[in-house]
Picture 1 (spheres, rainbow over the protein chains, first blue to last red):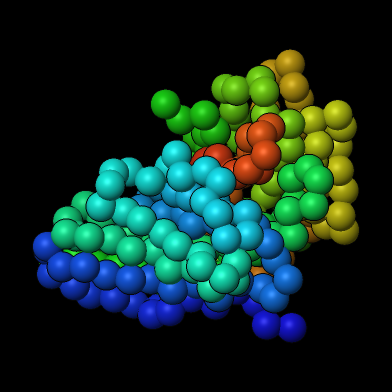
Picture 2 (cartoon, helix red, strand yellow):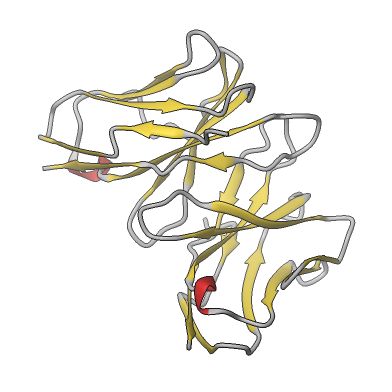
Length: 115
Length: 113
């Protein structure tokens, strides 16, 4: 079956611009996570959705970052007034989120470059 | 504050030999640990996991060992194959309703033919 997909695969923008990154999770997966991976680092948690609601947004670095999942499936990560430090690979993952920790399935990521 | 640490950024092993990747953690509340493998331009893919109530889990060529007293886990790959060359991330699951992962910085494994 189809895995997690993310679009675009690459995004180049200028400092100060607004960007949207999209994630299509595996069908039926109620849990959705966004992570950010900077060069030489492991993925860092940003936000977690259970269904339509953001159950944990403690990883969002500041209020320029926002994410939505209006119908409990596709999610969009939105970054306002981008800064060069936002350049990273943004990863989306989904899981069944049964009781207890479950395997998270990751998409290929969106590489964001802020010039 | 790096709660999950992989102190070896890279490792080279001859094909057929054992690869041992190490991971240390600081938070004794972590209750579930995972290893993910990542190829360039792809997302991480799940490899193997272990619950904190166990000290070993095996799946084919891959075995994960957990030493809770030392807050240390390791991944053994035997025999190593060239296709195993990738970046390996250790991750720990936070014992809360979110089950978010805390990742280490990764170890790049190169298996030499």
